[in-house]
Length: 454
Image (cartoon, rainbow, N blue to C red; front, side, top):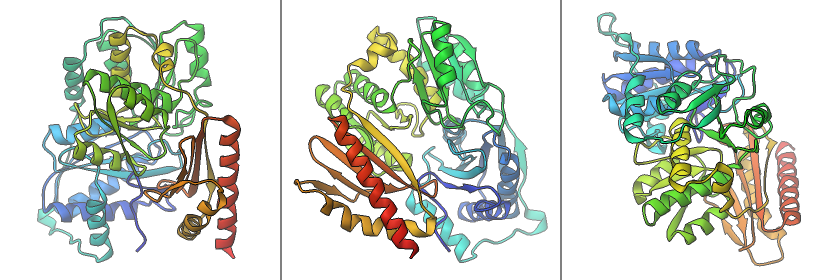
């Protein structure tokens, strides 16, 4: 059996790679691993969400375990409540930022952390070796509907007290945060205007990924309404994007670096965790604030693990997925947006001034379509070939894909863990160099994909 889990759970196109049958088997396998303990389940707003949630719950019940169904809920809140309510496993039906035809499932353990490699492999082995067993008719599990989201909101309201009546435009993108995020921000005293705040799994207002292009309408609203900030979430609200008071999209890398600097300053140093595809500006900010940067492979699972191991004060990916370990160990777009406002108040800065203190280097990201069957071959060849394309002395890292770097630039080529793509990222202190690096990386990837198909 091929590997089911990617960098963020099981994910794929509905009724092609991810089917109700597969999700039933996952539910049954989770039940087998739990030996009868309870599971809590939630979903985002995708059209296929109820179908997959029902399939997963059916698998759990068929194996003899009980399930609690929390309905539509953001992923970070499902993760937080898994620990807070004492469940052994939390299961989130979501494809996060992927297009609407995708869906999947992400598992969390009793501590609220996403399943790591060992736990994922154990589930895959149960399915592959057919270890799961169906319970007798009189021992099948039960399912109940619960709605404990207020517990999360109470936790946030007790921990964070905003003094300013922030004027916000909030765009949940028709995703899982459509109701809870605006409600929580209003409870904290913010003046909130919403857009795309109706649940719709077709995501008619914009794509589930809150990219600069997708957020142009939000930028316009912020500017015309003279708001203090625009806030946007992805499909399951584990990511957040910001638009500053001038209606300008705030680059992910600089927002991440600015928050890293804030947490280091508040803690008088410490460790920041971020993956190898994050900007080198975060290293410069950490140096300025007497902190240390720990680099990991891409994926919030890897970031969370390193945060726990190093006792880090903050961690995040350059896609708006931030982990604030003081609260819990799952990327949380809603909590991150509130802590961002708290940081602006503490520093007495506008959003634009807050990130102006972060060095800005040209960074470019793209992705190349690659059949899943060709990924391994292409990446193996690239690891040998790519370093030979540079005349100057370079550093090479195979932590995740292949990363070529000097003190002035870096190029990363890695296989996507959520899509049939190979991702290419480049950053440099000179814009011309970035373009050259990206073009070189894409050309080499295309050559290897072509070679793999021969």
